Length: 424
Image (cartoon, rainbow, N blue to C red; front, side):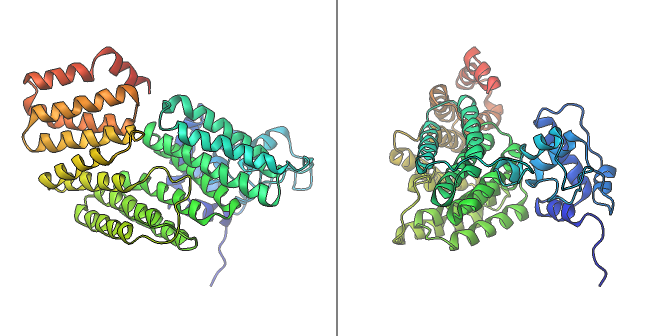
């Protein structure tokens, strides 16, 4: 069998990142450059072909930045040889490239000539973790656009601290850094609607979880990554990530709640791929898992799931499957079971109840629930909740001349709501 030729490292990294063709990588690099604020950079398939050839040219600085950020590895790990040689000091632009993404972001890529700082004390790990914990709580009350920059800044600090720590302190910082990137990725996906950026951020979270050797945290990150293709109706990619998430969960003492959440994530992906029956089966299995329980406690960072959240998944799936009376009953039960701190999820439940009433031919009741969702959104913004309300309004088009629908339009498009929605 002939040996593979060309830059096999770059090709392997491309395929591992989910880009099956050179054109896919070229398109992703161009889009990633735009998101990173690099103007005028357009990568073509011809350029990628040259990079994967036997004599791969050393990319320009901006291309290096995007390659490292997107694929999560240093230039050398991607099979490129610097023109100044590996044993000579690196120019400033190369040094900057190494700290823009991937392994280098986490302080894992060694920079020749770099002086390693004295190890941080054990308190550094606890202090860094405390801020991560505070950000996790603030997510439920602070506007995502205001919280996200603080979380990214905290992650940057973690990347500085990580190479300056050892042993248990390093594991503490790495785990907190993984949580920080996970929270940032959640905001980017669920609140800011930036799936490509979220995927890159979650990849960094996974790398940090690996540094901490925390399989359960790794499972949570990969399951969140499954949402991205799942919401795009790419079932194969979503299921592949769910298989990986379940594999990681088997390596750790996973609580019944965590295992049920994995079922719920897969159920939502199946629902968005048009497989409501499969989704309901998964939700039924999750209910059985919660009922049976086990001896393992859920991790502190898992604050996004509960039996009420599972019921909310179920109600949404029942509604999409056309089981309207059952969906109504389930969702009303969710409202009764939710705690006061679950305001973001409450907007989604109101939106789903509005959708149930709209599908049942009750436009006035649909508008009533939509109004409640808007009341809550005025207090706690959640893009997913607003999306639910807008979906309901589209289904009410046959009733758009009724007073209740016109009143809803006035609410949806008043000054404050419109500016708030467009500004977020």
